[in-house]
Length: 343
Image (cartoon, rainbow, N blue to C red):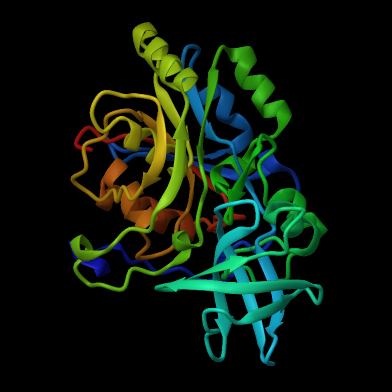
């Protein structure tokens, strides 16, 4: 398939810059991937759209304050975005600078952290932070929430609260699993009262999720790597759901990718790196329904959704969402998608 197949026109004013006043106050476009029919709903209606014995699988990753301003010891301003913490004092990071720092050079971050560049691999730099507290603790103290590039305001205290799911617990993501931002504790309680089961996976969303696809032939795109963990308790919950005739609902494309990675053969618990790139023609093995936000034109996430429900049906639904002035991307509105029969 060609990259242009996944394009659509989006007015810039529909890119949501702030979240809804309440997490569950967003809109919800319900799309049937088999018929192509859609319905305009509110997210607060979600409990009425799922059934007892269904299983919702959430990504419990926690967004870290991965963005740091600083300078080279030799002069020159830089911006660091930590991609992955790999040890107590080490992390891989992207560095924005007029001239890339050399291996062995020193950086000063947040005006107080002396950091050394240990090595470079492609676009990433391995940084060594001061010993003692650990990278996670230093980022929490001195870093800023890494809002997506299409959100134009600097991160503030409200972003620290809202660009994080209410069930986040495993630190490591540099972007939020945004479908989960629509859930609050009352919604989770309403789902449990209806008999919906819940389970968790972890997938640490990387900055690569915002990287554009740079090839016209989609099959030549190299997917970025992200760390995931599917625990045995979640595998057991899926098996039980299947035995009861329930459906597996992935909350977010990240949950879906983790589950489909673990279910490449027989669904088994495990952890590691995933580069799973889902495009139309992929055969889904685990997930029956998907809750997700609206995604960027020509993005790998839009390709995944197109694989799940059919490209023509998804693009038609997106055109409807534009016409009805839905909010797009991380702070925008949501979709509930029934998997297409050909997916």
